[in-house]
Amino acid sequence: MEVQIAVAKVKKYATSESGDSLEVVERPNGGLSVVLADGQSSGRGAKRVSNMVVRKVIALLAEGVRDGAAARAASDYLFTERQGKVQATLNILSADMQTRTLVVTRNNPAPVLIYTDGHLLSLDEDSTPVGIYRGTRPVVTEMPLKVGMTVVMFTDGIVHAGARYGRKMDAQALLQSLFTEAPGHAEGESAPPSAEVIAETLLQQALRLDENRPTDDISVVALQVIARDEEPRIRRMLVRLPL
Amino acid sequence: MEVQIAVAKVKKYATSESGDSLEVVERPNGGLSVVLADGQSSGRGAKRVSNMVVRKVIALLAEGVRDGAAARAASDYLFTERQGKVQATLNILSADMQTRTLVVTRNNPAPVLIYTDGHLLSLDEDSTPVGIYRGTRPVVTEMPLKVGMTVVMFTDGIVHAGARYGRKMDAQALLQSLFTEAPGHAEGESAPPSAEVIAETLLQQALRLDENRPTDDISVVALQVIARDEEPRIRRMLVRLPL
Image (cartoon, rainbow over all chains, first blue to last red; front, side, top):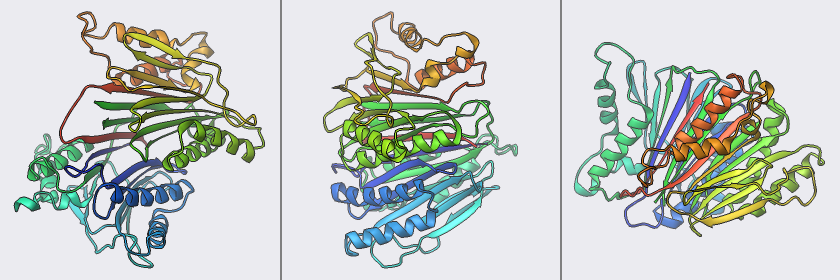
């Protein structure tokens, strides 16, 4: 079994930097976590906020703190540092090898989409960003890691893509079509689009709707569990950073 | 200009986990850093040590501390925590967008190889691992980021690959041959092998020399600066984790 994670990330048009922060970290008891935060507004100030939140979360995860507790701590921390005046959305997506589960932690109104057993689920229970209230809790969903499972999470740059031009991005429909049209699907085979294709397709659609000038920072993460086995087990990573 | 970083990582045969730790983190003033540590011995104990070192370094880098100072701090920290009884090798490889330089920080006898302007350089100045002496300093090399530049760093699993079988891994010769045999090279074009191909080739060669049962944890990192331009600028990441 192999977990594949693909990330595609772009900053709002004509800003100095993305207000979204994303880090992928190893879990001390095995597995990986992807931590994604979107700071209020955009540019340098937003970046500082999202960076602060992500840093806090990854430091706690590295100490073995569970995801939900790390999200609560990040909220209290931002609330204390900025007196409840600044918010950030926060998502944690973990492949936990200790429990062999997928853990989705949301402090974000945007849904997390999960394709499993031929069905597309939307984790869209009401969820509050971190930093503005005392005692903010995340919505945590945990399920067994299964081959074929695909999880997609994103910041609101995806949700609102095209809004300036009166267009609407429907991530759920796009994802559904990607799975339905996948080659091999008709024959009942398991040949889903790769995590890389999913992240790239969602980002490119958002860019089209935004006329290639993103009206907000956009980050997309796709995680997929595939059947691949190889000995010895090789861990791989590829990062591409435009300068 | 785009920076591409490829990582390939495998654990010693028949151990519970890799004693090498590697994290890629965003620099607060722009750019990325790859932090790689190899803890003394192997398995869980080595992992704890390398993880402690990497965590310390990335926490400091995230605060804007320069690479050399972060390496010194990590050494003093490990020396204090383990009373000078445990060592770890440490490498930091940074693409610093503030200075537009490549910064190579070594606390590792293993060389870092750099291919630039048609030449292969070996950064192999004497360098001491962190944690065993008071006041250990890293060897820091800084040079302007240039298109075509390729940097390769690794843990000693590469250096000693095949030793059990009386074979010798020559990473420098292998890298040289990859560049010499690259298609397009004969016509004087700039068509170097990708970071991904370089990391994978080095790891696969080490695995062959070790009869596919690595005698030590092996980690390889290749960083390459390429000419690619794309608007808007998209940051991408792909992680593959066997479970």
